[in-house]
Image (tube, rainbow, N blue to C red; front, side, top):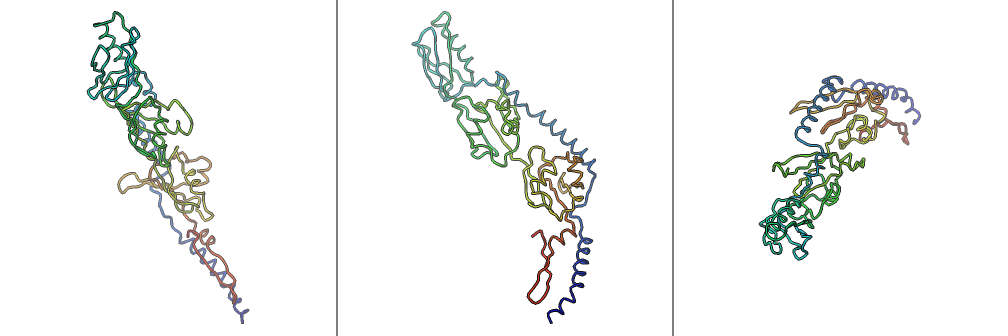
Length: 345
């Protein structure tokens, strides 16, 4: 009686094969290409050049921050100064700048040093001494505590906030004060600083990838009191479809399509390698889609397209591959059965 069940096995196998081909024929692409790779690359190159030009117009390189003029600290309320008069030690004093911007010195009384640099404060005190007491005075002003202007750190840091600048700090020092970068941190930092000559604020950009990951200490610039440091979050791309670990991944270091697929664990055995789609939203409700072949990407053809924030990399599924990856046989106690489950679950 049980043996009679096996007479249907050839028919069952035929049905399985026909079902597989039917699934393969019914498989349809999730995304249809809207433009060619060449046109997409051309548009992207133009857009990237415009963005680079915008950054150059609005932001200075970190190298501009390292000029001696830009490093001169301007005195303000709360700063602690050590004033030395070399000709008369009785005039030496350790004083703190008052809320009115003055310091009280022996024999001179209140001297306004607000917004002066240490060098300018030295010259001013020397001029007063020359007028009243000494023929050729020499004065040194050393800033022991930089308290008047705080450093503000915001963005993708573990402990953002405002910090007292008690002494000269470099960028890595300030990042450490803020607890370090988060995993979502982008590759650049933006610094806003007031130009002491013009009184206007200026914007600077620092390459964090070059500094933190590659160790280029030229990017470890001096941060002054009053500076504002902003570390934006990195963009994210979405990798979905026939990959082993679909998900959201950060866009860093000119991430390419093949690198994004590698982050997602690589292709599955049911991937349609000639049907990889890159979806990019270009404006409200509009998107551009290009079709890529994995073999060509591996050979370097076309894989010079760098992903942007919110890009989608979708690997289409092969209908036949999906079927055979999910199908299987089971031998029951009373006969032979067939089971199927989708490999995406």
